[in-house]
Each structure stands twice: as structure tokens, then as C-alpha cells.
Amino acid sequence: RIRPRLTDEFRWTPGKTGQVQAQARSGGKAARPPLGKQIKQGVFTGISYMIPAVVAGGTMMGVSGLIAVSNGIDNINDPSIWAHHPNLFWVVVHYFNTTGSLLFDVMFPFFAGFTAFGLANRQGLVPGFLGGLLSTKLGAGFFGALIIGLFVGFFVRWLDEKIKISETYISIKTVLLVPVIASAVVVVLMMFVIGPVFGQLNISLREWLAGTGQAGPLMYAALIAGAMAFDLGGPVNKAALTIALAFALDKVLPLTSCMIGIVMPPIGIGVATMIDKWVVRKQVYGDNFRQLGKTALVLGMLGISEGAIPFALADPLFVVPVNVIGSILAAGVAEVLGAQMWLPLAAVWAWPFVTNAWAYVIGILAGTAFIALLNIYYRNYRINRGTLSLDEEQ
Image (cartoon, rainbow, N blue to C red; front, side, top):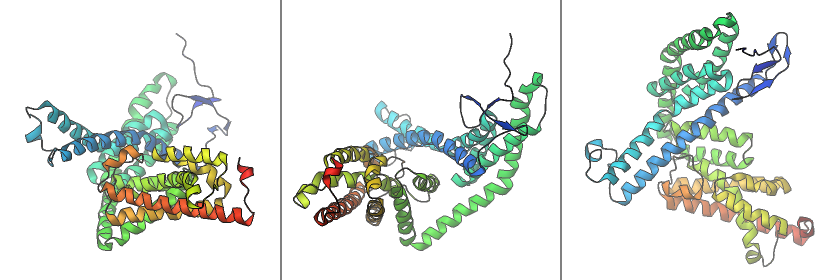
């Protein structure tokens, strides 16, 4: 059998799973994007592979906990009671809870492993996964997994370039030399540098938050909610999501404000397009925007913020600040009233998993009223002044 070889014009491109892409080469090295873009590629690859584990594990734990609490049971985790219970239903509920917890235990290995994979492909998986395991064991948490995942990705790629070996024995390098050397370096780095540093950082952060009372979490909630609503799925939104996930996975702060910031703009604007004629006795949105508003409302209930983008583009100087302030208001009300959401689920069907769900809903109602009413009155004012014509929006 003749094995095809990859020529200089065709190389496996890190981060593009399952694809062999033609890539320009200069000076004997593959052309690569800027360093910042490479880091972003690795981090987003890690997050995209980790999220399904978080969602699956969190949902299993949430559903089992909801069933247990609704039946007056608060110790569904105790294996001595439930693992051999005569009622098979409670055995299944118990194992749903423990399996969800097990998935949570592999979140950081998933994240670090696939962050390394996004930069160095398959050779980065094993040492990256090992770094994530050690991050969990040593208490370094999300940020420890992030640092070791990025390090592994770049280090493995460097090793692959520096270790020269005959094509006949190339599998020795990819299966033995690179993974073993990288794994050994990971162990030393995690045990003596990253683990102790980020483990202590997590402890210090918890102590600082405990000392701030409600002011610290409230300020955090405002910043995250505002950032999530600012560009509706853009880079600011993604950065805020990454930070919120980091704190939530390390059990420092919940995802309440993050999840509220996702849904507030589309829900608020969607409601505005439906109630304008009752608020100011006339329609202030054209037929086109009224249809877009219905879509935005449905998408908002499903946890998708992009439905509000057409409204933000039509009048960014007004709509974007109102979205941000409304989301901050909603998150602040929910935070003060004691709502807590630890799962990365923004859709309406996930709201029953919120601690103090009534507070969560009140916060969303407050933000919805703020966004909807300000948009309606502002547009009505512009129509009365003659600076806005609905005929242009038909």
C-alpha cells in the first residue's frame, strides 16, 4: 500500500478537527495567526468541548435534586441509604445524582485537554487532560486548567517541531516521545508552580468575597450582566461568559447574573413590540420590527440573545445602554433577593433549577419592564417629534 504524504503545501492545521487545509508557508514554517488569536482559538475549543459535560452533569444533578426535594428528601447523595434501596426508582435517582457529580469532576480535564488540542491537535490531549486532573486535585480550578492547557498546547507544538525523526518511525514521536515528555513537564509544573499559586488564589478570592458581604457579589453581578448584554454574543459577551464560568466551576460565584444577562435584551425588546399599543395607545414599531420582536422573545426564552441584534443595530446609542442597564437591574434584583443559578442554562425550562426561582423571575420581570417601557416611550417621543417614521420599518 502506498501511503500519501503531506507535502509542504498541506499540513494539519491546529484547531481544525478532521480537516487538512492548504496553508501558505514562508521561511519553512507554517503561517500562523497572531498569538492572541491562537490563544482565543485554544480557549474556545476547550470551552466548547467542556460545556456539554457541564450541562449534562448539571442537569442530571438538578433533576435528581428537584425530584428528591419535591418528595421531602434532602440526602439523595448518601449511598448507604439509596444505593441498595428496595424501590428501584430512588436507586436510579441516586445514581443520576452521583453520575452528574462524576461529570463535574472531569470538567477541568476536558477543558485543559481540549484547549491543548485546539493548539496542538491529538498530541496535546493526554498531557492536557493530565494537567486538568491535577488542577482539580490541587484546587487550582478553572484558571489553573486554563494556564496548563495553553502551556501544553504551545509546548507540545514546540516539541513536535524540535524533535526530528525519520518518517519511518514518526509514530514513536507522536505516541511516545511527545506525550511522555509533555506529561512529565506537566506534573512538575502543576505540583510546584501552577497548583500552589492558583490554589492559594482561589482561597484568597473566597476569603475576600466573604469579607465584602453582599457588596462584592453585587458588583460582580452588575459587571457580568452588563457585559453579557452589551454586544449580544460578541467578544465582550464571550469574555464575560468565560469569566463567569470560571468562577462558577470553582464554586466561587454562581452564574445567575450571566444567565440573566443573556436573556434580558431579547425578552425586554420582544415584550416592547407586543405591549406598545397598550402603553402609549398606539404602535411604535413597524410591522417588520413587530415580527422580529416576536422572534426575539421566543429566542430569549430559549436562552439566545442574538434576536435583539436588529433592534440594537437600528439605534445602538439608545438600545445598547438600555439593554445593559436593564440587565444590571434584573441581575441586581435577583441577587439581592437570593436567587442562585449554578448551571450554564439560560432557557426558561432551566429556571426550575434556580435556588429561589421566584427571586430569579422577579429580577427578569423588573429588567423586562425597564427595557420594554424605556424603548416604547423613547420611540413614541421620536414619532411625536417627527424623527422616526414607521413607514420606513414596514
